[in-house]
Image (cartoon, rainbow, N blue to C red; front, top):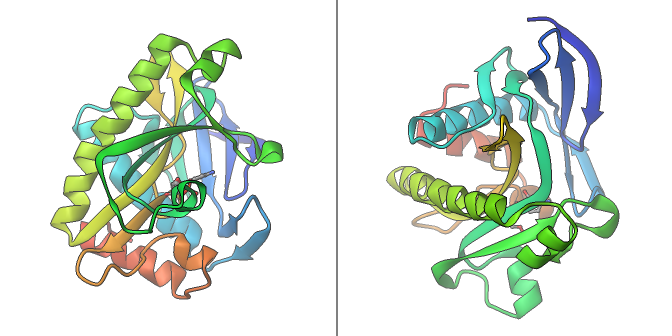
Length: 236
Ligand code: C5P
């Protein structure tokens, strides 16, 4: 497998073509950003930590029967993934109220959501990823009814697997964002799962162990990501 030209550079990852038409290389950079790129920094070891964290979680999800784009780790900061036709919609599940939900609905942070709630956002930086609903997806052709049904099913399936995984390691999975794509007609989990795209709190102290440490200037961002990984059994 040979890495070829860069296809796309996001805020924290870059995608490269390979000599295989159905594989891409994902490079996890040390860059980190929040608030639509308003707050930007470089954090030492972040690329390596998120790459290995993501590989660990994607492997757990595959083992639980959830199709993912993850193929294999290539290096500290790179992994090989299946090429997907990405659906420009972010699926969010929330087990406990935090973040934009609290701001939008005036709910207090930390309130249990029973049942967990599900939201859709359009992946569009210029529009600040607005919240959308299933009708928008269909009217504008972003995803079909059938695709949405499968995306929602898989997003909740991920919740079942990961809530238990984090709970067993003394942590609460507060919320997370997933992105999906299509590969050979099938909905497949893409992008990444790392402390950058979810909220994780310590079960006892309720200390924040995710990207909110960066967003809110709490410090020890990568040290805390590593602690989350260590508790789960990720080898860095
Ligand atoms: O900001 P908000 O509360 O809506 O985020 C919900 C969850 O989705 C959080 O875990 C956040 O880290 C994640 N998210 C993300 N990328 C975005 C928006 C949200 O990873 N563009």
